Image (cartoon, rainbow, N blue to C red; front, top):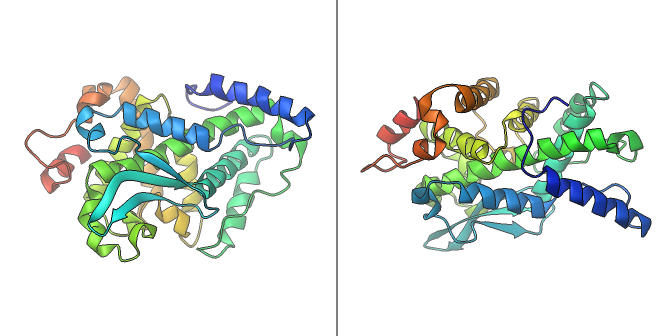
Length: 294
């Protein structure tokens, strides 16, 4: 395997593999993903738990909720006409999409070109269509233990960066700041409106938050690479990042943050300290954001 670091969810997913094997004997589907919404919620809970208290206390007690929808959505929960709850909602369709992207990336290691083929299929869809699943998923070689272990790792890392970015938009007040511009309510991705400095702050906070949970950046880089290869930015991608982002530069940033986290600058060797609000300043102010981006 070529995954940087093991995740804390290997034991959990190993148990789920055994459970799925037992279910197969009772005529349930033979091929099911070991990670789903329950694992996504667990990762979200861990992301929130590792935040600096000054950020964690700005979020709702249940910071992540589930939306039963085939449409991939991850966004703030609209409370009422006065604003938003400090909570994000992730749809079952978004979890399914990340499982498929992670699976295509894992299959690519045994069948080079498979990931590109799946991305090309996504590219042929209309921007608002529900994403299709990868081709030929009944093939048993795509469900071997080595392939699925990589799929699990990629999925965990993709979920982590997606949730961490959206949580950062809450505690950095991006949703509150742009609420009046979001005429379609929570169906409008906040990434339509945030500025480049605000985006850079979210990237740094979210990456450190994921690394705090022992989830490295390779899965995030694969997810962003998938988006980069799509000629039209699909709606589901707008919930992850702005359309104007230079993704090659972004992926280099992620790799640099991960390297610095483990081996480099002292400010990143103590992520809790670096995730603390600048004393006496609004974390989303231009001065604070400039400091975070340096």
